Picture (spheres, rainbow, N blue to C red):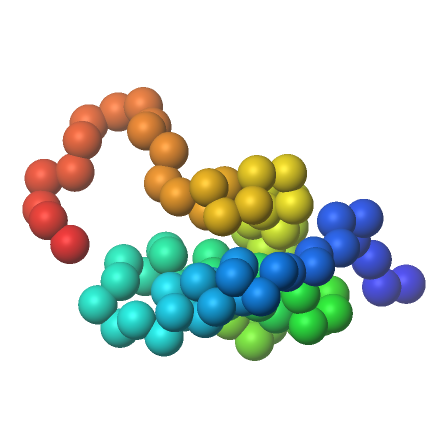
Length: 91
């Protein structure tokens, strides 16, 4: 039985424009591009498994970003300060 996400994504025109820009920008970090594509595909009505297969990422990762976007919108896709050693190399 397919899993349906309880977090349905509906984008405003401004959010869609911003996500499409992030997804197309080839100089952006990879994580930004993937997160944007996940949300865009979720807004198109695809299930987490289908999105994961298209983007070659695990379904759990798709679920995480869909949920975070649902609650925090565009700010939820930004990198949060994490534990551990800071990055040494610039993007």
